[in-house]
Image 1 (cartoon, chains in turn purple, red):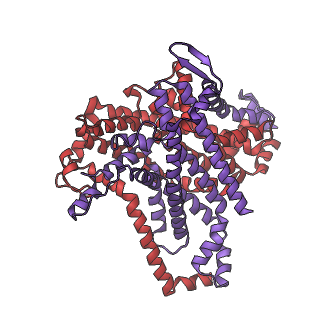
Image 2: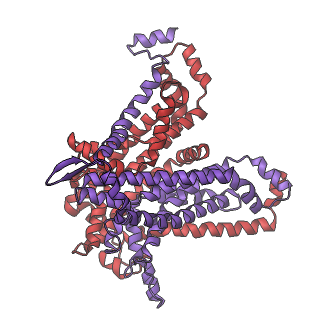
Image 3: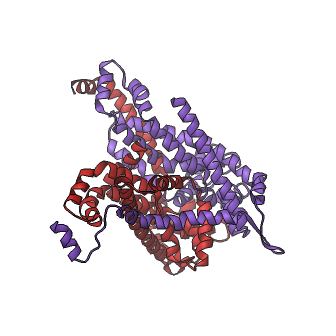
Length: 301
Length: 293
């Protein structure tokens, strides 16, 4: 074993197979525990206490959680996100799937160009995306308002009570459609080529092939992206936070649950209650994802 | 192949190809409206920003003036923000990718006690809402005096669970057990095997995680918003959003609009460039994660 001897001579430690996995996991796991597990445990601890000027910090058990369950500021946000998600996720993923199938069909010009171009918004920070769309939505100086004025049409109102949720949903669609499209496209490219030849011999059209063979084959990928979209939606924060000045009075400080938790912690200094709000939100995320997975599995079975 | 070439020449194929390309072009226009808007707007003076049509250039080319304003406003703090963003993203990106590669390799090639549980924990981590983590991280780090330092952003950003998942999948595919076994038969230690045999084959996966973690930190907003409070430590996202809030609050900050536009353009160009240069990696990497999941 000349190599091992040489390694030892150079003063390095000879790591055996039984120790190695722990060594390789150590840096990640140490940080994982420090910045994920520990904060979670700490937050859970916090959520069981209450701090008041008079009594100081007291153990209150589940009292904060009971308060969250009847707190309209929290549930209004959750209901809003359900509306948002039911609108935004199907549109975003439906378009991503449609465009991935079109790109994959081989019946387009400039496939590589479009594939890369569609991904560009993912590189734009959500803050910048919100800010740019915020300008575009502006009734007086936004280009859509300007165009309407030029043609003497009623100005589109993107920032009113009835429309702003759709306007924020549009920002999210813009940001993440390309990302999902790339994932679908990669899954479609992994489908063996001979399947297409076989179906073409059987007389199937391109459209039939796409809908009856390709689509079911990438369904597992679609389900994963739906779950990630649900998780992302329930955490909505940056876009409404950035746009709060554009629609004051509509986007309030508890517009989404994350916004509410942020306000509770950093405006009201209610860290304990904020922690409980975050945990209940985490519970909502877990329950919704789990229910969706059950439904998806039942349909697949 | 004969079948494919026959259909490729038919009139209906050419027709559908034309219409499908039109459909793609429509989406392309939608994708590029905000990008085009920021390019156009960054060439305009503040007066033209409000006084001329938003989606076309005005006569007055104000781009260099805007850039100069951007880098001199408030004693040139924007360049500080830019350097902070680069520092946070590069250190977090490289560190996160390296640690994810180590961990993914361990999960892929070794059997050990607690493997299933720890991998399940890593996967489950994506479910946790950001506030549930960031607020307690803020409280914990303030106890040890790390709040409002670069570490407050860098350390939490080094934990990138999707990277571990991606690297495990990648190592399953790209790295044969026989190769590692051959190294062991030759008497090489595990660290030697990793760095001299395995890492070379894992490089494309490493590059994928590197760019994803880099972009995640570059674009992050909530974490630095909470953990930093002095303007000197801000990354571009937090700094620009403050200027934007000032501009939209109506309290005399309107002059900031053209500066915010120039700043937005400057802050997205490096990330887009990184994606274009490294497209081979993220396309393959996102695919691997998506297909296997």
